Picture 1 (cartoon, rainbow, N blue to C red):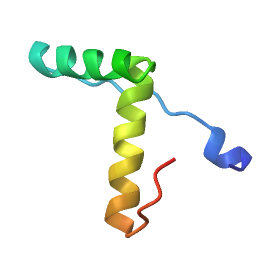
Picture 2: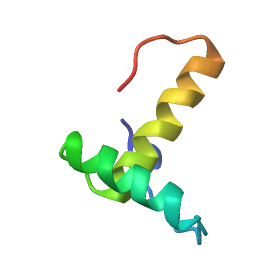
Picture 3: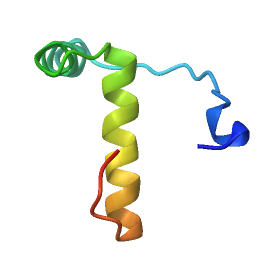
Picture 4: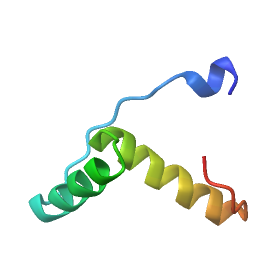
Length: 56
């Protein structure tokens, strides 16, 4: 990653309790934070949409 890609933007994200609970469990199973898991899911789906099957 270059310097520009390392910059992080903060967002407010509202989730239902059930979605939060599911992501929290998933994150724990994969030894990630909830924030890290959300970023992982988003990056994977962005790559899939772009046609790149290799997840980070």
